Amino acid sequence: MKDLTLTVQGMSCGHCVSSVEGALNELDGVSEVNVNLGEGKVDVKFDESKVTVDQMKEAIDDQGYDVVA
Image 1 (cartoon, rainbow, N blue to C red):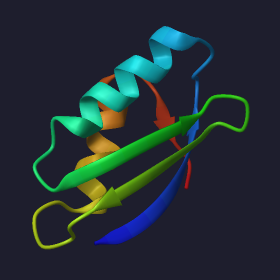
Image 2 (cartoon, helix red, strand yellow):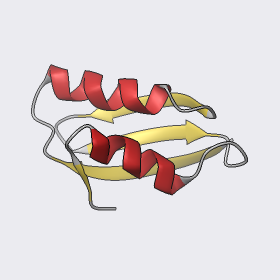
Image 3 (cartoon, rainbow, N blue to C red):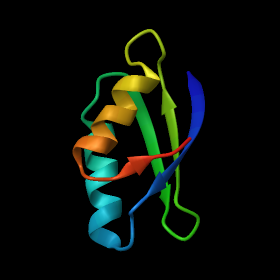
C-alpha cells in the first residue's frame, strides 16, 4: 500500500467531501480516503498495482474539483 496526499481546490462543504470520497472509493485499489476540507488536502491509501495517481486525479476532476498537487 502507498500513501499519497493530493491538494484539491474547489472543495467548500460536506457535499464536496462526499463527492471526492465517493469518487475515489469507487476506484479498485483505493483502500482509504480522508479529506481535510480546511486545508484542501485529500489523503489516499492505495495499491499502486491496481490504480494510478492519474486515475485518482481524473476521478476528482470528473467531480468538478481541481487537483493542484
